[in-house]
Length: 268
Length: 207
Image 1 (cartoon, rainbow over the protein chains, first blue to last red):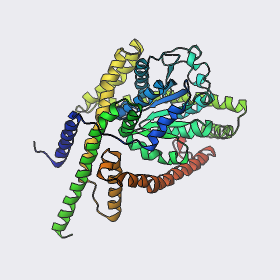
Image 2 (cartoon, chains in turn blue, red):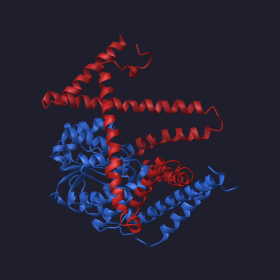
Image 3 (cartoon, helix red, strand yellow):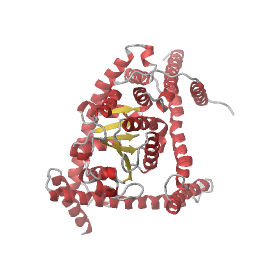
Image 4 (cartoon, chains in turn green, blue):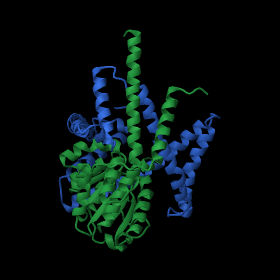
């Protein structure tokens, strides 16, 4: 089999990433203003505040989005806040439930009292609007099928007025709907943890104040991990991601050099 | 007659949902809640349409012998996951969870990860500074890419502020223009649907 140019680029990326993943180097990442704002927001809430955490992502984005979600949930539990988890994507339901369960166990948090998982609701726009009117009517039972009113944490929670904010852990544009329907209609404070590719999409919303702040991608996760003093997938993945970025940039430069040399040869 | 009925229902619900947005009256809130609940129920039924459509398409493609194994595998996945969930539940340690965590999640992550390889290949073969505009685009993309890596500040102290400037000015201006355009387009389309001017959602002829 004859290897073509694209095969060499694939192979190069594979080799580069494999080597750097084996190196025990941790890059120090300066904390961005947006990540600091998320940290300060959770820090500034009085203990026992209730936060909605919406796992609005699919399994495909897990390697990037999981460290973001983990860092935020760890921080919230460490500060003594109470969390209500849910998902507006079917696939995010199980992922979110397992994450909350595991982190709650790390901090000795009790289900029903310190955290609750409501599960999945189809049609995200209707679900967001419906929760603004009544969360118990939107989710009459939790993920495990227990009636809403039987769970201690949920007894005083009727709608968005009873929660401090929603943090949408998303790999796409679903957070936009939290802003358009949750924030615009019900004055819900919206924060987000998103993939790096989505960061610039939300810049106008942060500038306009529609979104409070966000933590973006693996870099954001690494920044957050340094703030809470607990290393995780973000810090571990930063070197590999940074090296891959440099590799892609070098390929762009190389491709352009070849392009211009070829043009000159042809006399164009 | 049936088209007029559908258009009438669309008009009434469009006007009601528009009007209730501006009201805090308990009746308006109750109507809003009821409509939203029905919306979710109707949406759940559309999932069945999706399943039926997938099955129909798979059976049609099965006629081609080379595609048959893939279609059978797809159908098996479609049937097995709900069966596993219904028989053993979806709690930790159940076969459903095992399939999700060990088959579905890694497969999806793998497909998504392949993007990195395609981007690497495309960056070498496709990102060419063929014109001034393309060169500006390429330059801006390179600065943003470098700034998102932890090596950006090491290359130059000026890089992070320049990347911030690109994000906060030209990039945001373009995004705002697009968002405002989308907003105006949505508003116009909604009005056209509510007033019965836009009828393509009914299917068939426009008349």
